[in-house]
Length: 64
Image 1 (tube, rainbow, N blue to C red):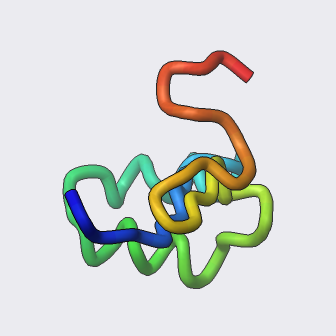
Image 2: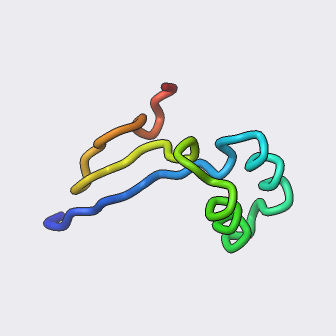
Image 3: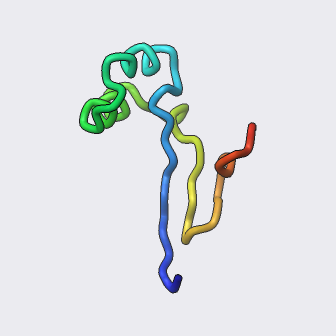
């Protein structure tokens, strides 16, 4: 309470190539971040929050 946050929610399995690579990276944060940095693009962005409010994308639990 009393603070704001800008957050981007990423999906490390957003594309077939990323999902394939994540099969060997699962459970290792450094490897998962490497997959996001090297293979990720706009398709990996699931939601964006500005000042704590949903700006784009689906809120957690939404099916869309």
